[in-house]
Image (cartoon, rainbow, N blue to C red):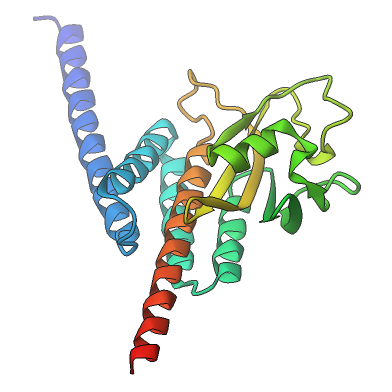
Amino acid sequence: MSREQHVRDAVDRFIARLRQATDAHLEALAAELLQLIRGDMRSSRADLDRAAVEVARAVAKGGSHARHDLISRVADAVRRLDDATSLRGVLDALADGASAEASRVAVLLVDGDTLRSYRQYGFAPGLAAAEMPVSASPLLAGAVRLRQVTPVPASDRPDPTGPAFMRVSPGQTGLILPVVLQRYAVALVYADGAARETENAGAPVWTDQIEVLVRHASARLENITSQRTAEALTSRGA
């Protein structure tokens, strides 16, 4: 066997070991995330598993530096959500966690047929979200009604009649994510940032992290609500 073949074989063995180690680390990350998120017993096991797998996949798509930073940010953001004991506390933790990932973030409270601005990051003067009807955009209305993550497409010719804060430039991607409590959207998170290039190993993973944070915020609100209901019933029976 030639020296070149020995070198190639050695490289192949190294790559195989590296892949095995990466898979093991991702499994460990998923398990750790499940432990962090599992405090919200109202979330189903399937939801928790999906959340952990989504973040693990997101981490796998980033470079080594991105992986380290993402793991730290996920853990910090989830801990802040777990420590929150009110709607305001949950939304503040969610807004801060999302703003660490996306270029621009707006958190809007759903008040009947009206959206009220709660927290915003990254918007230029005159482009921030203001109070508006839910019907100001079909995308906003759909996110509230269907309680689903809604993509906001980029365009070099944005609709001038739509909300200015939702104008996504080419090369960017936008999302509207509902915070759900008892099957109702109580808040919306709008976020935009660099579009993911699937062929790029260091592609942005911010969309995955924000989606997991929003899902966990919803579970945390359900948990807080159920705790308060149980406390009220206990005090009445005392």
